[in-house]
Image (cartoon, rainbow, N blue to C red; front, side):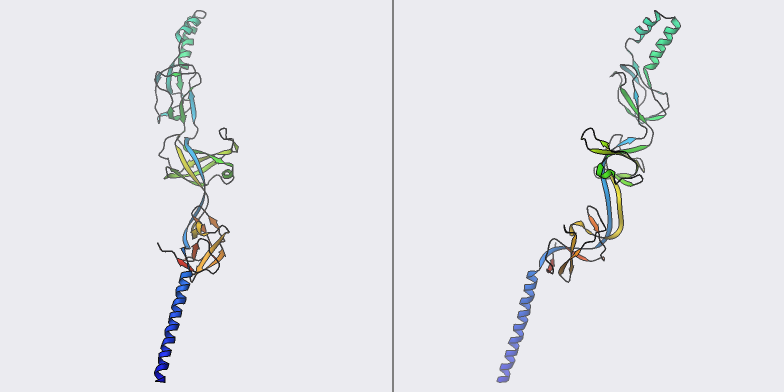
Length: 302
């Protein structure tokens, strides 16, 4: 009888111990904080200067009307190649015949004819150099004034002109690569050709400098079109990275090992808007958020 009672007591004690362990495990699990965990992976970190610019052409040259008058004929169209001296358009000068007649009254007939011919020749706007017609700014029967720009000519080389802030200007230099985009779509690549001196923007008063870039290939956009330019300042390819939100405002990381988090220094080598390069082993787990030292972490499930 005693022996049977002892066996029962032993069984009850074992059950009580198992229940205690189960309750203890449930308490530990209940005390764990749910958090998003990320791991160190391989990726790229690219630091850029974001600029806005417009498409232009090297050696842009305006063609101007010499006399006021009415546009009689336009001989060219955008995209056409022209030679130096080639006629672009003709302007009818009001009173040209009367002026020549008045001149003839006080000059020999030969000189009067030459004077009229000079007037008529001056009424023809000609290309100042071998070039490509980029814009024709007038049409037939339009009035133009003396010195009005009637067409824009240029060389065939396309360029991108940007205005960079004082902060960005100090980080830009000739030869840097850039990605050219419009409406979020990549159009092509370019290289920084020149960085101008700082000067005050007449519209805002801010100090800016003109940055010129040369596309690697012709961009499929018209002259004057607005583009977005990301100049690459520094980059690291295929390096260990973490999402930037894993780094705390103190410059630390919450390293998670065996479900316990420990705060360690981040030692960020380089970071951009998305990733931070860190000297940690691939697969290292990090919790995103704020925790206490030694806190138990339970991974957040989607």
